[in-house]
Amino acid sequence: MRLWLILFKKEFKESLRNFKWLWIPLVLILLGIMQPVTSYFLPDILESFGDLPEGAILNFPVPTAAQVLAETIGQFNQIGVLIIVLAFMGIITGERNKGTNVMVLVKPVPFSTYITTKWVHMSLLMISAFLLGFLIALYYTFELIGTVPMSHVFKGMLVYCLWLLFITSILLLFSVLFNSTAAVAALTLGTTITLSLLSSLTPKLMAWSPGMLVSHTFRFFETGSAGDGFWLAAIITAVIIFISLVASTYIFKNKEVVSHTT
Amino acid sequence: MSLILTEALTKTFNGTNAVDQIDLSIKEGVCTALLGPNGAGKTTTLNMLTGLMKKSSGNIIFDKRYSGDRRKYIGYLPQYPKFYSWMTGEEYVIYSGQLGGISKQEAIKKTDDLLAMVGLSDDKRKKIAGYSGGMKQRLGIAQALIHDPKLLILDEPVSALDPIGRREVLELMKTLKKKTSILFSTHVLHDAEEVCEDIFIIKKGKVVVEGNLGELQKKYQKPTIYIETEEPLESWSQSLKDIEWLRHIEADNTKLTITVENIDVAREYILNNTGLRNLNIKSFQVAKTTLEDLFMEVTK
Amino acid sequence: MKVESFINDLQSVPWSLVAPIIILSFILMVIAFIDCFKHGRTNGPQWVWILVIVFINIAGPIAYFIFGRRND
Ligand SMILES: Nc1ncnc2c1ncn2[C@@H]1O[C@H](COP(=O)(O)OP(=O)(O)OP(=O)(O)O)[C@@H](O)[C@H]1O
Ligand SMILES: [Mg+2]
Image (tube, rainbow over all chains, first blue to last red; front, side):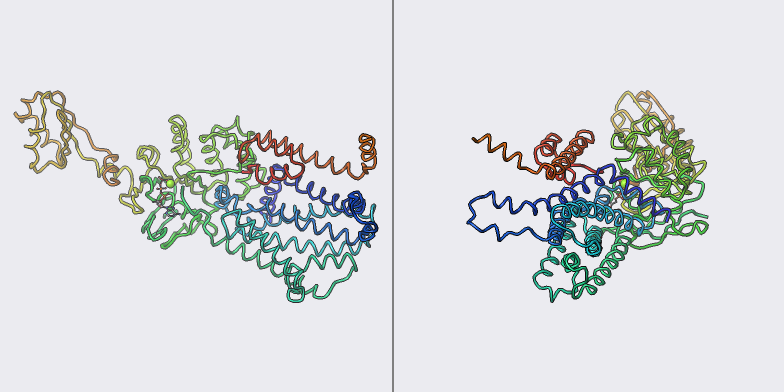
């Protein structure tokens, strides 16, 4: 545990020094402000185009607070996830390609410690940034549009965090498997986008899929209670996260630390 | 008792053996050199000893007294050390110490001493990004020593250094070997002769010569005679070819080098040889071959 | 006439809502700018990144942190 904290602190310090702990939350906060403000002004903006036929305005009512929160999550889920995945695509690959992992792994450091400190740090940064951005969005939504019971919001965010952990764990797995950061990013984004798309196109077939968690989040915002198949998706996601972590450690342990000598 | 024994240790890359059935025995309290030309398999061997590379076959046996994770007992300097360049030198060594299992307070204290020893005291608060190659090499030695390893493994510790740095690191190794066993690789015999007791000469993944340096020197030293004349001596040297005490002959215009079995017989014969006298001897010198000649010979 | 409507538009902008966005994106730019300048190790020429950071709002600094900065 002492050793675990030492490696974790190193990850933390590194991300402080390269400003990840500053710019990523900042970007999510910006996203969190922009979405509710845009929703609030959308009717005005559309009106100012002026060319719209009389009465068209009526077709663009100001959305409900729960809808705005859902839209915010939608934004986070595209731009936010894209940014996080790109920011962490080198999580294992980076050190391996530079060779800086050699002098760490030649010390008595368990491979599982090396892997899990990186994963926990990445997840912590991602969830902190998302929560911060979401809190700001919540404030703006409540001020401009209307309120949603806090218990609904809380449950919805909890579910959304599970989806985020799913993303970080497959990112870790791909990073252990492949040496190219581009491949890691493409596979992670590809998997999450495919799962999300399939889940929204064929929700019945994909009821088990982690991709359903985002729509479950929306449902929690709306009603505060779990939709059909929520527990199935949640449990399967948790299992996938666990398996990814175990598999990452196992694969990492069995891979050469040094594969060429020059 | 050997600190590390390897039995038929082998590493195969795409069907070719980079390390081929190597049997090493690294003794405790001794400095051992792994000597070989480029591509001989030194780095590959060391990587298998540290566990950074998986062996293809064979065994690595660590002394029973040091059971468990063998990385605890090893300090390693890679041939091309790569650091977290966002850290300062001091931070890096403290971090290494903590990874090696010592407490933070202890790591801080030892880091100070070690950085002073390798001559980095003035630069320890600088980011490693701004270090020169030689400074990184010294930092690499400091991080390898911080957790008091039983065995210090250095992969070509002096190759990247200028003559002064080279001198300093070799002197440093002489001091270090009083406290810890050292295994280091080099392609320069002279470095090995300077600090080591034991040597393994490897070539194309195989050990070709091994043993105690002193004994090897005795065994492979052969009396050698250098002769220089005023007149060309090549045609005369043909007359020596069939003599039974001659081992090796090399003639070049007015210069001649011969290696012989028995120095007294050879000296007697040559100095009394009228054919040679007629060529006007300029110099006559008796010496001994060095291991360098052997090294050149076996790694040719 | 034009100027008048421009001033009208300006006044109708809800500054209390927009100001935080402007301020935060400015902070983001300043952080990226200072880091690019001080850290100095970039993939590709540093001056290009400085231009990207300064002239491309929000996306510029993000691109710098992800692709431009050499974190080793
Ligand atoms: N990943 C790899 N794939 C194929 N061949 C490899 C690989 N790594 C090393 N080799 C080969 O193994 C042989 C031994 O290499 P090694 O680096 O161990 O030699 P060395 O003695 O350390 O040489 P040097 O003095 O140049 O450091 C070389 O022929 C090298 O080309
Ligand atoms: Mg080598």
